[in-house]
Amino acid sequence: MASNSQNPRRTFAIISHPDAGKTTLTEKLLLQGGAIHLAGEVKARGQARRARSDWMKIEQQRGISVTSSVMTFEREGITFNLLDTPGHEDFSEDTYRTLTAVDSAIMVIDAAKGIEPQTRKLFEVCRLRSVPIITFVNKVDREGRDTFELLDEVADMLALDVSPQGWPIGMGGQFEGVLDFTTGMVARPEGPSKEFKGRRDKDPVLPEKFADEAELAQAGYPEFDLEAYRNGDLTPVFFGSALKNFGVTELIEAIADFAPPPRPQPAGDEQISPDRDEVTGFIFKVQANMDPNHRDRIAFMRQVSGTFKRGMKLTPSGHGKPIAIHSPILFFAQDRELADTAEAGDIIGIPNHGTLRVGDSLSEKNLVRFTGLPNFAPEILRRVVLKDPTKTKQLRKALDDLSEEGVIQVFYPEFGANWIVGVVGQLQLEVLISRLSAEYKVEAVLEPAPFDTARWIRGSDEAVATFEGFNRANLARDRDNDLVFLARSAWDVNYQQEKHPELVFSATKER
Ligand code: G4P
Image: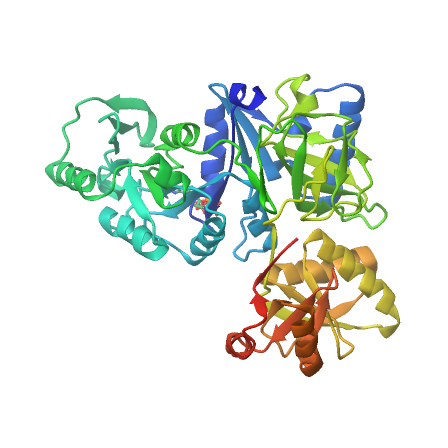
């Protein structure tokens, strides 16, 4: 099918530590893209208008913006889908999973701080899936660290080749612009605000120190290599200032030129190509309504192949009953015709009443099951204790629902009365308690659990049964009734793994 090559997509996310400048850069990218089309702004008739108002109602009730989860803009014939990764101090599985739906990422680093903990964590998730990364060293208009030191830190801490694509000519008070290695031009600050307004000097005279540095950098670091970048082994590095507009155009051009188009996605032993005729996709995020009277949810599907049309029937892998998708939220919505279709690489928001779960695959004809959408071993485990013990049934329902939505993971121990919830970030626990109370009228508290982490157990039926016989006190079942080992420490995991080489203690579970 030619649709993708005619209408190229770049589906990407920005990863960074809070405060590095993700929001500022997002705004600048959208502005540069010119056309900011958020689905809430789409002018549409009939079916489409109904979809729009339903969805806006949900937004109002929830007090959050579904729109900002996916931002689509177009530039020079390319459609960019920018997926938001929630920007909390703390982060959650939502963030992890969003990264399963992108083809590439921009890593924003604060020039004064270098690689920070969250940048690193998110980077590791990208690496798991070989997601190629373009690095943007931000805030060079301010006093930052030595440029070589920053590059070496990225290379050493992340074990990546770095290929600088330009060089900051001074930082802070000495900042005189950014040299572009490809064109040899320097983007210059102008006016009292010292912003970049389009002035680029050809054959610039640079202060000796920086001319030497730039020369050294070009000779000393690897040249850009498209294949190494796309394999996730090399990152091109751009320097700029989101606030002052430096490097933003270069960054968009780099995504357009280097970043991969929609990649084939794994489904067991098969790779589903974006060119496949059939519409396929997977749910990477579910956002639920806070209003307890309406259990409406929006499931976000990353489209993997085919051309989606409004009203189309897709079958979820979970229960096999086809669902007609009459009111999809299409983020690519430049005009009315296009608002009715979507292509591989696009994101479709599907309103539903809880039928669609994170990790579900959808397809038109064959039941394709995408693999590689992992559940992550929780880093925080808590016992859920009810304030009112008669509410057990409601609690069970709530925990099942919320784990389906991916808010938490739930473990039902084989021994013991208290259920255990697991998360990767503290914030998820706060969300859990407030939603239990608001949506399910269940008041609960979380108490420390004697466990530190969890591992899914795999092995032959016999080996698993034997292990189960001896370790009941440390075993639980997850939402899908899969066996989970609750470990007291990382040491405990290693110990058991050494003792039981016939079993696999897995930190992730693919759905
Ligand atoms: P985040 O989403 O990654 O958390 O970062 P955000 O864009 O909110 O930026 C964090 C702070 O850094 C903001 O300042 C923002 O203005 C500033 N900033 C972002 N990019 C640049 C840059 O290129 N140069 C400089 N000098 N500053 C930058 P703030 O004081 O927290 O907010 P505000 O009061 O300025 O809005």
